[in-house]
Length: 466
Image (cartoon, rainbow, N blue to C red):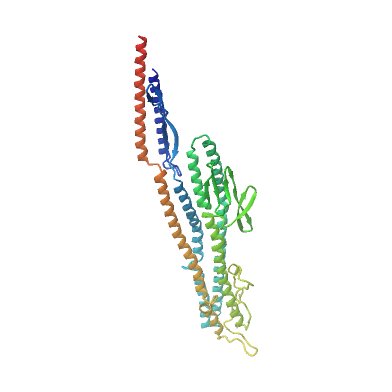
């Protein structure tokens, strides 16, 4: 009788093990399209055998653990690749906008520079023509407006980046807090010998997302908790403690900060990574460099034209009159550039009057000189106005093209690693169906065995009773 009872117990454990395995297979199939989910496998272990006479009889099977398919190396590689993808993606939108500002197609600053100096050349053909003189003023206004618009567009792009930084903070802080919470859940569960697979999957996915956004580094401590740090070493998550990010505004400037246990530190392009670093690099490096070049160009044109205009004479014998507004430095020259000369008679097409002579109506000497500035004056001794603008445009265009290549390369790297990760930890529907049939048959066999043992016990009881 004791042998039959042992058989019943073994059968019960087999039913339970097969049922649990089928439930895990069902969970795998349900989550096969869930982002970050790792395949779970049931670990079966036999119960210790008991001595029955001169034999050892097994006592059935038990579910010792449910483990997730996981490879730390691939997970870390995927996280590192996500940093590069985030950085490239962070720059894409802003660079595309910058390329639009410094376009070389259609109407652009280069075109307006040519039109402005061409208007002086046209004026030289008939210096006394008021229509041509008005055309010079109009073309100067169009050129100044194009510089104004370009400078304002750079400010708009900067403002868009600041808005993105501010709006991303809430989501980033939420992910940081979730990792700290999951650390607590995992530690509380696993300290009792269980494995919290679902929480670990969620934590890995959040870490990858933070790597793409902030370029974080992670490592697991001896308690199984994930520590999260910024590239510069500043902590974001320590155990169950989550730090927080914040922004502070001073005028139009937005500063990203880390609040770590009450201590606030400013973050810069050198202390973050990923998408945020890409945004800061554009805002703090690329845009200021482009703006400085734009201001240099605007200031050079205004300064040289003013100098030659002031040196010449108008139809009304005026001299010393500036064409554009003047500035002490080139700072914000593009934003502030405007035509201050309004009277067409004061356009200095001829040589300046002297004590003994007035400006001849047909004198075109100064108009020719100013008209030639567009192709003769060299900024920094190397570039004409147009070639200097072409260099600005080429720099932005090259950065945009390199960014497109970087995005493509980084995306390919992430895709390859994601495919590798899926081959290790992803759910194969075909494999799961095969296993489901296997354990279904095991369950049915255990049920049949249980029925057989039950019949044997009934027969034994009937024999004893009779």
